[in-house]
Length: 139
Image 1 (cartoon, one colour):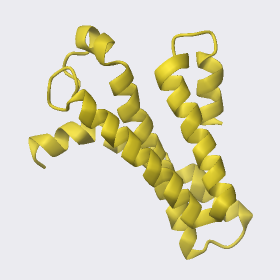
Image 2 (cartoon, rainbow, N blue to C red):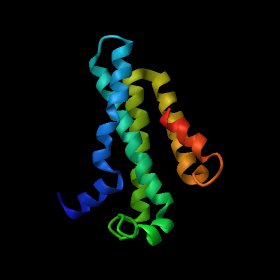
Image 3 (cartoon, rainbow, N blue to C red):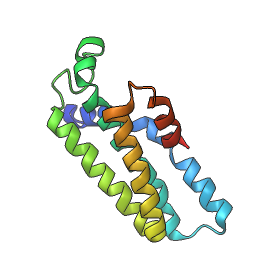
Image 4 (tube, rainbow, N blue to C red):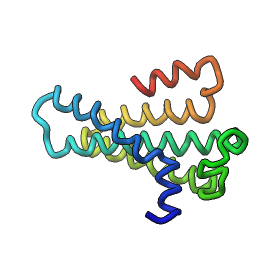
């Protein structure tokens, strides 16, 4: 893996995504026999998770410059603009994949989740509403 790819993998916390698909697969299995489209929902969840990680680092870039200078943005391995672009692209991919897997209801749910993640990372994290927003995103 190149150092550039390694920086982006670190930005989105690539290995942590292994914890994400289980919930969507369990939900799909509980709803009935697994269909081929059910594979897209875990992929959507991973995309939204990675989007949240990239957005978190973009939103915390000034704090990270002081407290975590080794992270991709403050170290200069990923620019803030690139991190924001990754967050936007992965958010769109996550909502789109959810729509492919479950139609409009799944896309609406994914969009609501994405909105919660964006609100948490960009506005609510350091407020009294922060824990509620995080709980909503994880719920």
